[in-house]
Amino acid sequence: MVSSEKYIQNRLDERKVLGTYRSLRTESDLVDFCSNDYLGFARYPALKVSIQQEIDAHPLNLNGATGSRLISGNITYTEELEQQIASFHKNEAGLLFNSGYDANVGLFSSLPQKGDTIIHDELIHASIIDGARLSHANRYTFRHNDLKSLQGKLKQAKGVCYVVIESIYSMDGDTPPIVEILKLTEQYSANLIVDEAHAVGLYPFGLISHLGVQDKVFARVVTFGKALGCHGAIILGSNLLREYLINFSRAFIYTTAASFQQIAAVKMAYELLSKSSPEIEKLNCNINLFKQGIKQSETYPLLQSDSAIQCIILNNNERAKHAAQTLQNSGLDVRAILSPTVAKGAERIRICIHSYNTAEDINLLTSTINNIIHA
Ligand SMILES: Cc1ncc(COP(=O)(O)O)c(C=O)c1O
Image (cartoon, rainbow, N blue to C red; front, side, top):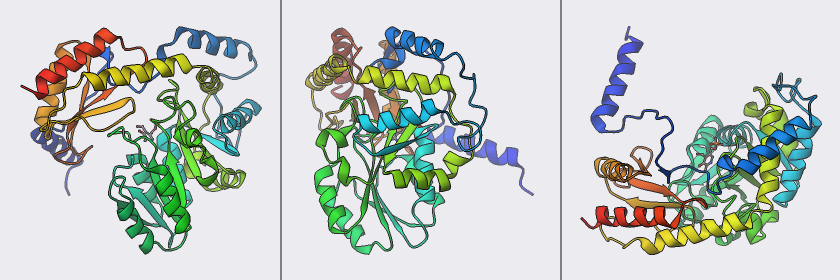
């Protein structure tokens, strides 16, 4: 019999040798260039006040949900919020999940069946891969943003086919050719599903409704833990899809519902988002300031991205970690993204730009990065 402690220790030691060991950190006083709080909602005092006022205005609500949505955890407030969020995104219906991870696992593990096909971009988020693995459907990946590669997989698809993309990719920050992908999915009668985790905020209600193509998209996943500064997620789609997920999605059925406090926070964050154009403008200015400040290097390029996620490819774990450490020593909280989270050779520093970063901080960031990549 092999001891589990020995297995655990070996795996951890292996990570240490490979330089891929992960450990938790607590808060720091470095300038934030790594969080997903793109518009500063998580730290916005007025939002904190409005959430508290909303909670105080509903004194009869309980501290906890007391059960799953199907047993004792469902309240009118949640159902009304789902409808309100669906309207913000110009969709028919929505169903809340406790996180984006849960939403993707809950969707992809329950909808595609044995004999069906899931085709996703090779850079798709881990939660989608995990959900797809739990389903009994065939799973194919296509090369990142490559229409030919997608078409090749569409030709092989059997049963009901689901094509899955992100509207802004979480690790590269780039945008796929959505209109062209929609043309292909229409041509092959496939259903397009879009994860909008990193697009909501930069485009207030996501890129799909910004492009006006929401009626052609089968479903969208929107998370509340990024630009909305809260926690949780919603799957947007038809009333029929909502009804299906309530009946078949295990990540929805077998879990305690979010508390009233969490739901109230999401409601207030959406109200703030609907009047946040100055913050969005500021975020875009900061993204431009950052991009203009970087002197491109052929060896360590800045990836093409117009989003809040900006990456410098440093080609190995050690160089990425060293660059992140140098930036942290200068007071800037930038994190390295290592393999196996990204492919070997694509190790990087991933910079998240925010509306609340100052020009001074961004200038310090770009000059420190320039020193690293042109040393
Ligand atoms: C593209 C994408 N989808 C889903 C998730 C998961 O969302 P959550 O953090 O709410 O679980 C993330 C977060 O890392 C993400 O980047």
